[in-house]
Image 1: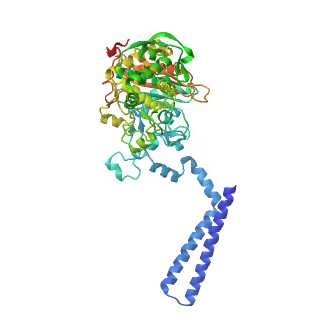
Image 2 (image 1 turned 180 degrees about the vertical axis):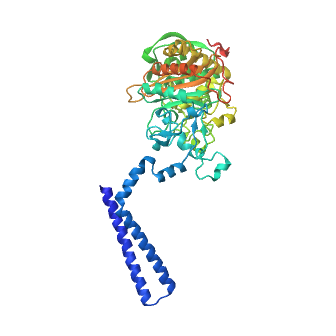
Image 3 (image 1 turned 90 degrees about the horizontal axis):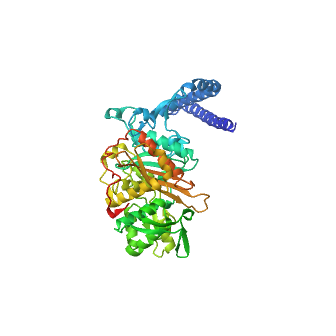
Length: 530
């Protein structure tokens, strides 16, 4: 009602102003004729008077026939407002294709909806957090649809450059529709916030990505900081083997004194003697991990920790936390994607005056440690790829241009970690995952994590692992993060097992270079582990 009143007031002002101008112009013309002024001025004024009269007549006619015009618009509404249709045609974009490149599995395309041609997103909410679409699509800034908009609008050929409404260039992603949908269904069934990431070990490409979050949220699995919990023990074990320290045995008491505080095992579990580092990872012994870290600090020094963690892709700092994003994190040809989607760096604080307790907290992934699920996946990718880290990518075209990667650990260290991770699922804290992929010919290795969060009713839950194909080679990473999810060995491990079963039933996800590398399980290892 208020809008109608304001509209009529505005129209009245326009009419009054126009009528006043028309009267003033008419008086000036009459006076000019009487005074016999220059003819060109009189002719110009007469012309303006005629135009003003035509405008006034046309506007008055619109007002008089307003009801009929509204009825006509409503009658034609089923075919769409031609002006809106023209604007939509001017914004035609190419399709977003999944890893198969098949139109039937497109992640964003045009189709009929309610009798109109519209942009549709077949994954729905499963792809909304990364691809686009879903609830509140117009508010999403961190999506492929938004950040690759200029490329999607580019004409496909030189001949289309001159066309008014070019079709647009298709964009093929490494993301696969089927595993992404499966991952989202598993995540959604938990009724928890979180993320699931599957990454190709040999290429670094993202195969599946599912995450919670509303339209206003950055991608949960890429931009979200969280404490990693016991998942971070993989870094402690990696440094032990990298430093050439021998495999040995240690007791695993229920707690250990660190300065003025104690660090305890989950549910105060106790083992008389476990192998180090493999057994520490298998049973996720906090007290043994702390003892390993303190022993390496004495033997190797703080600088050895800093250098190794930096090499693993974790940014170490002393006082103020780093704010700058890691350069060249993505393998991408799109500056907008690199600028908006580079995750914050994994942060590990090493203060000069750290107490033994603070040092022990880092060893078990608590305290001054912040990670993102994608960063953990990247670390796993290097472990599965024989110690060579590749930048993650989402663009199919970039796979042909990927470099040789960066070696972050010895190949023997990567093999040792893989063997230890297999024991975690076979007989350790992630045994619940085994039954999920039994009789598939595939295998799963990993590390569980249960991270305490201040003032939270339940801890965050993690599973970080590697999926192995029938040939025994690491194929994909799998990271499951559940906010307030409880124990990492329960829901996250179960989801990882279900995803392994799903991937085993899928045709080989072919990407350029896929299947060329990877370290087979069971390879003889240096150091005599297991």
